[in-house]
Amino acid sequence: MRRFFYQFEVGAPQSAVAEFHRDTRALRRLTPPPVWVQFHQLEPLAEGSVAEFTLWFGPFPVRWRAVHTQVDSLRGFTDTMVKGPLRFWKHSHTFKATDPQKTLIREEIEFEYPRGAAGWWTRLVYSPLALRLLFFYRSMITRWILERGRQD
Image (cartoon, rainbow, N blue to C red; front, top):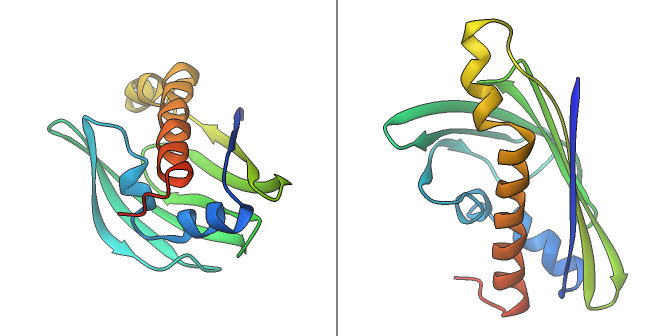
């Protein structure tokens, strides 16, 4: 099992960070171009809620179905892939106030690539370098939205 860890601080209260992630627009906002998200089912964030979507890497679709667990309205949540491109994917988002106007966001992913030829492209798209770039992008967008009060 592989593990990926990323953390960053946002100049926003913990409640604002949690609210941002509860917003059904969050995944779309946090997906970097040229990838775009097409939702098939998107339930409001709650224990057992489902998100089913396709990530389009140009003309190449990658379908996901994830279930949310360990949902805490202030401290974060976990999404676990139940159908998708990897053999296993469990992503925990944790929010911790470092002071009343700052929040540490921790992203931890446990994942496993599929075996054989079917998994070769996942080793590229979900490589540690690709994940680091993805979460750097997400940190920049999260800061831009929350620190500037942009909720559109």
